[in-house]
Length: 220
View 1 (spheres, one colour):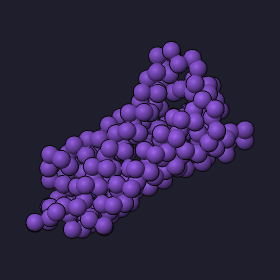
View 2 (cartoon, rainbow, N blue to C red; view 1 turned 45 degrees about the horizontal axis):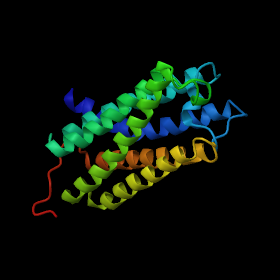
View 3 (cartoon, rainbow, N blue to C red; view 1 turned 30 degrees about the vertical axis):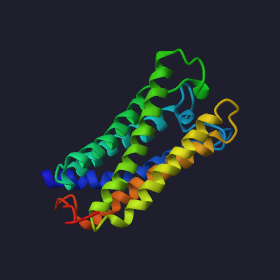
């Protein structure tokens, strides 16, 4: 039973990016007036929108649960090593934050009135989730150097974290004028989603959900 849950967790890491992208594309297609270039992803799930229910409960919530499941798999796959546990916990935090963002949707435009509790929780969840996953990508990039079978992902993970952080900063910078804001956010989210999928796929090929990985001796 434990192996089954770990395997499901690993598979969840591979599927989550696909479900997330599909939800964004599908919901965007249902709203011809929607701009992926200017508008936030969260606006697909904003209150009263025709795509609110779909984006919240087919995008945010399920992928958040998948991230938590993948984090649990990592806890098993890396033999409960303290640093790996922390890195896995960050992915789980992102999952919880994404669920919260889905349960507390933003108001129309995801901008006003920002004093509303619902809007404040959504914003806090979204920001926390981004930073948790960026930090996780960076930390895993460092950890991968200790595993011969994963060392090839080290530079890629660190680069993904840096790219995501850069475009998250651009997202914040462009918020007032909403020029390219949606594009910047999607690049940031996309870089992290692809990284998660690649990471999970590599673990699947190694059957890490079944055999805990061990650091390479004398690794640097």
